[in-house]
Image (cartoon, rainbow, N blue to C red; front, side):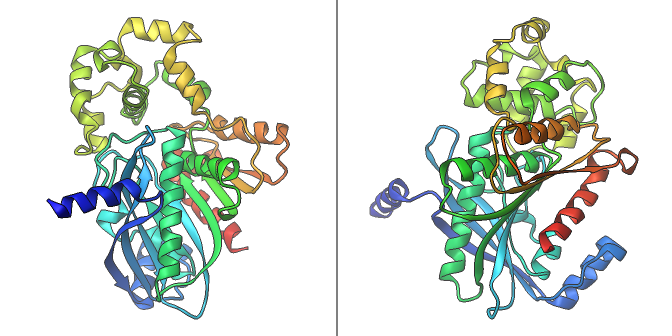
Length: 379
């Protein structure tokens, strides 16, 4: 009993970003990394410079209601104690299955690339994924941002306390798709609420849904087939859960409301959920809900989506927006609206890079965005 009392007391008084546990996962030599990079990227592969190590970190953060909770992620770093490296936090794209994260699966091509070329690479799992058993707060800006910020705090603590790694205290944020949204949310909260805590060098939000209440709503109300139909209920179920908007059967057709009670519990993949849904995502909603939402500008869901838009502020630190002109899942207009708003609001160091439409859609444009962001970061 005393052991559990101590654990309870420790939980009550621990701080955001405090490390709960650290677990070694893997190491690779320069030669092993180079072979993997060559196999994955071919002629685009960089020259690996360092042996690398990977750890899983479980850390303290807060849930969407502000209560303490645990989250997980990975930190990988070059095997060189004579140099200090920047921390690059990469925010991954949309995933539903809880174990489809780097803290469960180890190195991925991006962590191999960046760590072996001289970055301390971190990748938060996000709430509801990895060790976190919550409903993932999909496209909710505050819990998304704090899971990244607290991972940065835990990683900085690890760098200070470890004899294996040195950080130069420069922070770089990058992410694609949902990760682009989370990257921009983290940048915003860091500037607006904890400006002096981190040395934020630059952020690279890529292909994110920054205009949830405008561009993304219009896309869903267009009644057109959509390649990832689970995106819509993933968002709506998250908002119903965390804004306490009632029961799922108040919004979804009965057959889908019953499924959504368990489909987003972290045990199912996006492709499996897609197989159960119509190609036109809005068709899972009740017709009267669609009509009310379409014409009532004060519909609660519209208001909450608007509260989580990310385009109406003025970034001060460098920000490079990347987006594919042919993006069919997260339209290019999300980045264009954000960019124009930032400039109108007085930001001076904001840049927008467009991947030409002929190079492909959401998935295909990702590699061009990531490589371009890496080149700018190196410069």
